[in-house]
Amino acid sequence: MSDMGGEEVPQVPDPARSGRRVDAGGKAYTVAFAEVGSGDPVVFVHGWAVGPGPYLESLSRLADHGFRVVAPDLTRLGPHWRVSDAVASLARVVEERVEKPTAIVGHSLGGGIAALYCGTHRNRVSRLALINTIGASSLPHSLALLGLHFLPYISVSRWRTAMGFIETAHSSHGRQSVTDALRWLRGENLEPELETLARRHLPATVVWSRGDHLVPLRCGETIAEKLCAPLVVVDGDHGWLLQDPERFAQVISEVLRPSRAEIRPMRLRRESA
Image (cartoon, rainbow, N blue to C red):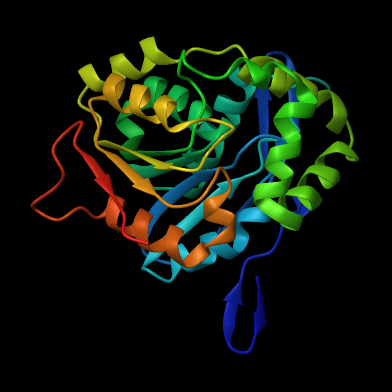
């Protein structure tokens, strides 16, 4: 962390300073993470190919609401990226940095990783929040094309996502990791896993933006149905949490600390603009 004007500012994680060694599937690598704030623990899982860097402003705003946010970098996991390694790496960071059951928040690809982690580490999770995530069978076929997938993601998330992608792609094994992760996400259906989480009574909320043309709102409705979870709809597109850090912090803090009049499962709530 660095100090600017008296404020704590999260930095892009450096494996040499903030890494955790992981041995999985016969290979060993170091997983870096960013951490900011103090209070109730929240583990944030980033989207495809960008790492936690583009999210740091949003995560800092969330920390201002009284959370300690830990965000592992799951983009580069050795010569090849595998979702099992991503889940193992997430588990390692949670084990090392969080002492009690924690809230897990995942965006896009990170939502799928978060859901799989919850399925194998239910006792370590207090609540799950999925934001514009993959995993529904209704995912558009256009995601099968790399160019069609990434170009709209660049436009909605602006320079932060572009820089995160460039950093990942130009790192050691980065291009292979980007391709491997895309190959997994474009065909993955997590609906059976989501139904299992619902049967295990995991408190969960699905948050979606109504203008997401990459992973449309109908995918969010499917995921919320499978989880038996409330669906909160906000303005914006796939990268809304990067474009409006304060709205992200407000919405997620409410999701993670629900009032006694918590939303009933499968009731649709739309945030005002």
